[in-house]
Figure (cartoon, rainbow, N blue to C red):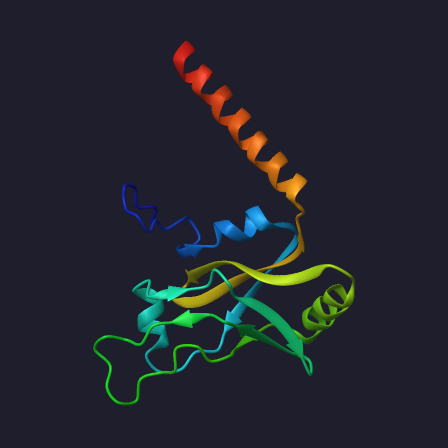
Length: 162
């Protein structure tokens, strides 16, 4: 089922990546990840499948043993009617109670935040990969940039030798 050359590629397990939050990997160091479902209404699924969403500033919170995704902007569906969804509402994330307890304990520790890293389709269900992240300081960001540049130069030299 693996398609090549398409912008949205399917992998072996039937996963189609809709978007990756690259800025989160730069601003935060990811300690753990968790796959969650997301509770959507009406035309939100069609907008997500069409790529009409933004989650660069979004984060998740644990509130009364429920996970909530905040500041995920899903644009209204173009071909919807008067019952279109609200773009900036809080959306509930679906996870097991034990996982939510574990996340709650981690977030209560100093410096940890829940950040959505990836939104993808898995067997026609929309999933969110949630990361337990710790913020990087300026020096860590500089080290990340330096490591990335060194890796690029090594790959460039390797390609030139072949």
